[in-house]
Image 1 (tube, helix red, strand yellow):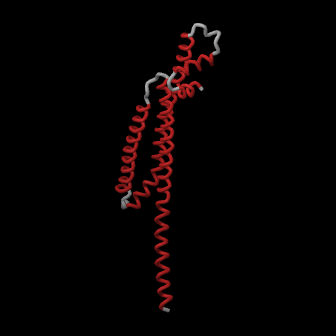
Image 2 (cartoon, rainbow, N blue to C red):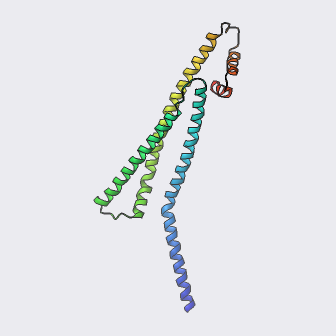
Image 3 (cartoon, rainbow, N blue to C red):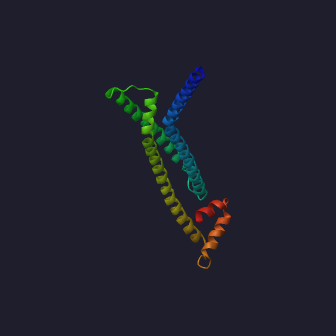
Length: 189
C-alpha cells in the first residue's frame, strides 16, 4: 500500500511537471518560431544588400559614384525609427490594458501581448524596408540604362568608321581596354 502511494505521488509530480513544461513550451513556441523567422528574413536581407553592393561596384567601374552606403544608412535609420515606434505602440497597448481594463501586468501577459502584436510590426517593417530597397534598385536600373546609353554613344562617336565594324566587336574591344572586364561584361549582358 505504501509503495502504491509513493508511486502515485511520483506519477502525479512527474505528470504535473510535464504539464507545466508543455504549457511553457506551447506558450513560447510561437514566439520562438517568429524569432527564427525574423533571423531568416535578416539573412535574406543581407544577401540582397550584398547583391546590391555588387551592382554598385559594377556601376562604379563604369563611372558612376557609389551610393550603396546611402541605402545602408537609410535602412538603418528606418529600422531604428520603426523599432522605437514599435516599442512606443507596444507600451501604449500594455498601458491601455493596465488602466482601462484593470488587468494585472506580469511576464506572461507581456509575452502574450508581444506575440500578438509582433507579426504586424514585423510585416510593416519588412514592407517599409523592401519599399526602400525596391525604390533604390529601380533608381539604379535607370542609372544603369542611362550610363549604358552614354557608353554606347561614346563608343560610336570616338570611332569614325563605326559603320564597317560590327557593334559587338567594338564593345568587346572597349571592354578589353578596361581594368575590370568581368564587371563590364556583367553590365553589358
